[in-house]
Length: 289
Ligand code: SF4
Ligand code: SF4
Image 1 (cartoon, rainbow, N blue to C red):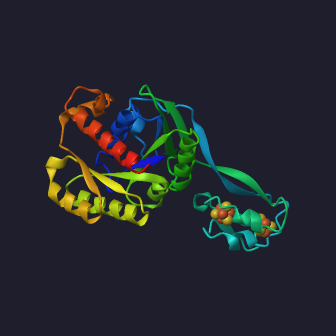
Image 2 (cartoon, protein in one colour):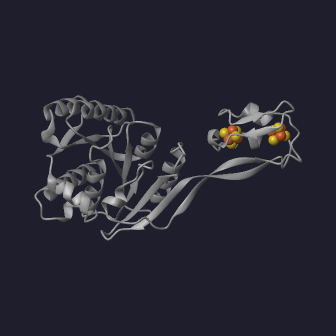
Image 3 (tube, rainbow, N blue to C red):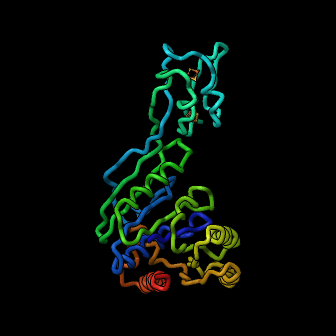
């Protein structure tokens, strides 16, 4: 069983909701948290942890054996990414940044051994035990690399392989294909937004994506006193999503963020808000059983 914490716009407090919700849910489920915001993972920072158990994410990348290559250009012709260019005599050269690792060139090459299976490092995944009773899986894209999808897919697979009763997925911001990949298999999307014009606009995009993927969504409004929360409620209602929490701007939350101490574990009143979100999520999941 999987739930996802997502948000159309960056900086809405999505990760704060994800870690505090996960800690609260850990009292009721054997679970894992997966940070799939691979371009800027920060759940480990909010939890005050150093990621451990690093594993590389590697893709196929062709290497040419020029002793064998027949200069037939077939590899370049079949490459949809135009990652192989050929010289006048047909000698192929690879532009590694364009290669997606699909291996079509290797399959198309008529000369055995002319293309050798090289590897390209895309990023890493990490498996970190937390002091809160659940493991955190983190995906991290290699600096300078812009293909995030393989790292999202590998990190998600690593988290799923733990075989937990519940997997909480923290997605990237936006509605791109890596977000869809992260949302896939979810029973519920917790969409975190804020009541600013941009927050409302981007929040609506994630609700539309949830509809397209036929996954139920609920809404958490962060910094709810800094804009038009009524407008968020209208948008949520239009998309059949309940607003399950309104979290006002809070210095206690910011302090807990800076100190790497999750607010849900403190005695501040805001802790109750996150426990309420967890209760609503549990209610929803039980209702679906
Ligand atoms: S692996 Fe795919 S993308 Fe990369 S060079 Fe070969 S055909 Fe092109
Ligand atoms: S398909 Fe194979 S033999 Fe033909 S140019 Fe490419 S590497 Fe050389």
